[in-house]
Length: 210
Image (cartoon, rainbow, N blue to C red; front, side, top):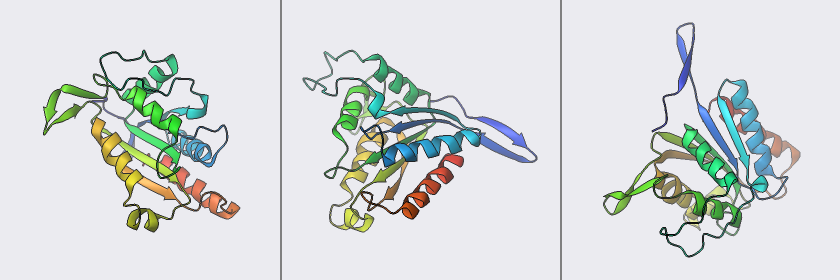
């Protein structure tokens, strides 16, 4: 469990400030995902929240998990260890990512493969209904997902596959819930006005640590 959030008393209201870890999950050096992450970060810091941010592009690591077992794990590269420590430090996790071919970018999936480890994020020694015990409970998440697929198509035609993966098979599996999804569709060639609206939404979410 993360330590309790700190608060600030203003008049009769108590504002709960959060420790927020933001992961820009786009592998490129410039992207809409990066812009959304930065807008969220600036707004959150201005509101008094503590923020740590990592950009996938800047992380150097081997994305290949290897033999697919947990008995002989690859040692985490220092950058991956820092990401995992930031995840453990946080109270609220924000992920910005594009949807490519119905799923996550390969490097981002590789990051999850490498850092979501037994003993750090879930406990295989304690199970319930055959599932290991989550070790990162008490945290929430927000995903800002960009895609060309409209939200109704993602839901009706593709059965929200990537949404279910993120909410249920990744974040909830390690105890992070609820995970709320904000989707920005038609993201390949949006108008300047549309991008401005999306960035404004990111700032609102950051201010409220939502």
